[in-house]
Image (cartoon, rainbow, N blue to C red; front, top):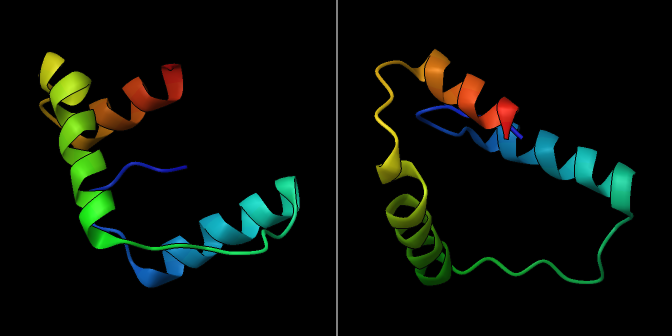
Length: 66
């Protein structure tokens, strides 16, 4: 996984490729923007809003430490 301000389609494909190698290819992949947006909002409320990160590097370091 990675931390950044924007995610390119190539980044998504690379992450999926790595997951498929590690865990096998799933039968189905479901993408639902409403679900994703809700998940991100909840994650932000529960995790990200607890921390004040001044730089993207701090975010990456916090993510790797977890």
